[in-house]
Image (cartoon, rainbow, N blue to C red; front, side, top):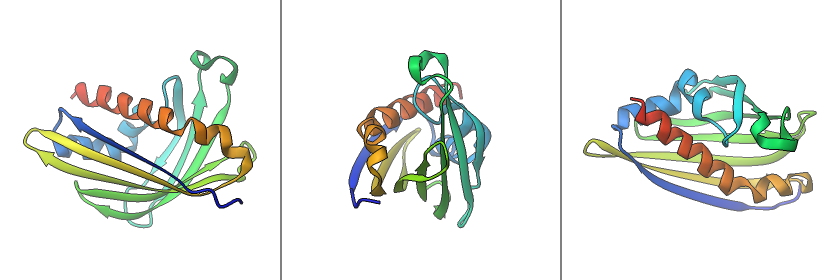
Length: 158
């Protein structure tokens, strides 16, 4: 793998209490509904938000994504730190269709209560990637932004 470090930070204030935002990030049934860019579903969503817990997600591109429809985008990882309602740190490794590593990254999510609202800071640090991952890396900011938009919509439901 080529050493190709990239970094992305997204900060968002949600009109939802920290407990609800935390639950959306740690309950796989909720996470499954918002994870990934628009047009993507998650037929596989294993998310064990405990230190050492496993992450196994397969995103499936829907017909809204045109020529990408039907493609599966697997990822796996491990939780490194889980501080209830405050911080999540996990590895996030994007795999290709034959499950070879394309992108290795570390994700840190911090949650701060602001009265009845929650400030979330998402920090993604790509620590390694392959040449095959270039298109995915170029779309990383858009994909994460759409995913966080979907999270906001999920939180608005209560």
